[in-house]
Image (cartoon, rainbow, N blue to C red):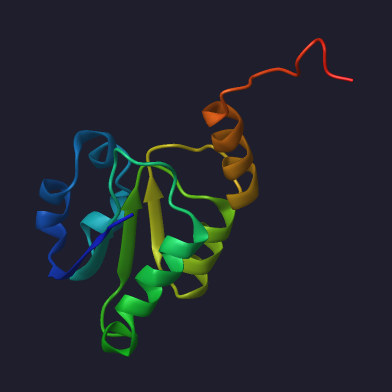
Length: 124
């Protein structure tokens, strides 16, 4: 999963960068602050999992450490990815309020992708 990091985004421009579902979820407190470093995760993909969140934190690196507040936007985040981002001080804004873990999402994804949806009746 790819993501974009946009440094020095003014609060007035924040809503213009976001797709409509995320604009509606934009907290009022973000309209007054800024500038922000924005991490945009794709909206058309699965929830952001911990590996992708960890890569984003690494890419943020020391260059963005404490310089300006960081806000991450995405369709949904797993509990682990949310924790990784929060530990770095990143504000997370998502469309969904689902509770996924990396493991539960992988289990569901695997079962949906499986060609065999139920055990065979003749299996012994």
